[in-house]
Each structure stands twice: as C-alpha cells, then as structure tokens.
Image (cartoon, rainbow, N blue to C red; front, top):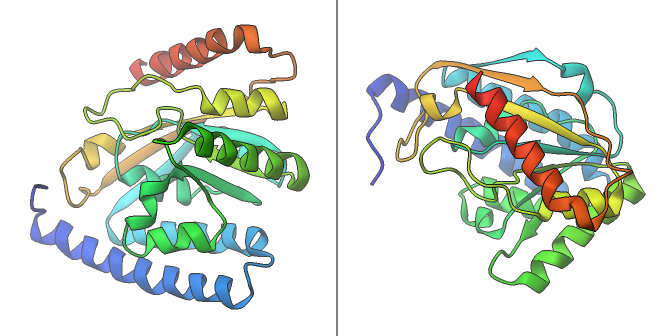
Amino acid sequence: MGRLPSWRAGLGLAAAWALMAVGLTAMTLLSLVTLRVGVDRWFPPFGRALARGALAVMGVRVVVRSGAERLAGRRARICVINHCSQLDILVIGSLLPDGVTVVAKKEMIFVPFIGLGFVAFKFVLIDRARRDRAQRSLKEAGERIRNRAATVVIAPEGTRSRTGELGPFKMGAFHLALHTQAPVVPIVMRGCAALQPMGAIAPRPGTVTVDVLEEIPTDGWSEDDLKARRDRLHALYVAELSG
C-alpha cells in the first residue's frame, strides 16, 4: 500500500488529477471524434501543456540543463529514458517533441484517464507476455519512424525500477534502432525517484533535472554488435547518473 501524502502534497495531487482528468478527457474525445486523424500533429503541444500544468500544481519544477535543442523539430529519432518513478511520465510528457509516439507496456491502459489516452493518441502498447505481439508492436513503431518522421520515446529498462537505481536494459529499443537506422537520443532524468519513490502516492515538491545527451548514430549498427551497443548505452547512463 502506498504511503499517504502530506495534506499539501495530497492537495497538489488532487488538483493535478483533476487537471489531467479534464484535459485528457477533452483530448481523448477530440481524438475519437476526428477518428484520430492528425492526432500526431496536435497531441504534442497539448500534451506538453497538460503535463507542465500538472507538474506545476504539484510543485515539481523541470529544468533542462543541456541539449534541449536536440528535441526541437519533427524528425525520425528514438528517445530513450531512464524509468525510476511514476513521475517520469509527466516529466517526459512536459518535453514531448513534435510528431512523437510513445512505446509503453499494455498495462498502462488500466491507469485512470491516462490509459484511454494511450489508445486514443495512437501510442504503441507492448504485450510483454507475448513475444510475437511485442515484435509486431515494435514493427509498428518502426514504420512510424520511417514513414512519418516520428520520434519514438521508449524506456529500455522496460518497467519502472523498484529501487530508484538504473535497471538492466532490454533489447527492444536497440532492435528498433537497428531496423530503422534512426539516431538514438539518450534523455537522462534525475530527481524523480527522490521526489516520488516506489510506494509514494504523491510526489514531494522539488526539482527534476534533465539532460538530453548527444544523439548516437545507428546507421553502422549490426545484429552482431547489438548487445554491445546496449551495454555501452547502459554504461553511459550509469556514468551520467553517478556523476
């Protein structure tokens, strides 16, 4: 059972959920009424505004210390993020590039308000229990990168860290990079686990810092060295997070 928040944190959480409920419901209805046509154009600016509003009422400030320009414009790229807190969703949401899609576990559809949006906004949901379905989902993400100059956001850990420490990386993001040859853009978030660790219902007010690292070209990657590429990126995150 999650730890109960202080009354101030609880008030901020209630206000954030109310904002998210109204905003996501309106955006979801708009997406469904328009049969999801053009959703990849209008969702990112609305999503950024909604996430920033929710963070603001909870007293969480996001500071991008370096590399913000690497998220500018619409182009093919794979943004990878470290995932250690529920707060990560709002933090990365506040930075969504244009033409973005998100790759997430299918269980996200059961999160109130957010889950329905994952379907309405054409996010790619992965069934981790079924390898064939997971592969089809990654293929769909790859087609969006190639055909729509889309940015895909994915957490290579696959699931949220229970300890706040960086977990092992799975191979999905690296297979996606290999087959699309889209550059990998590492996004390092610090402070999320401290503000909202596992079991905390609401985040404490505070600051999260973000560094968008130099993109990694993938046009020379091969199947034979894919695990080595994964291990090098994991080592890069370890170094960044311990610095």
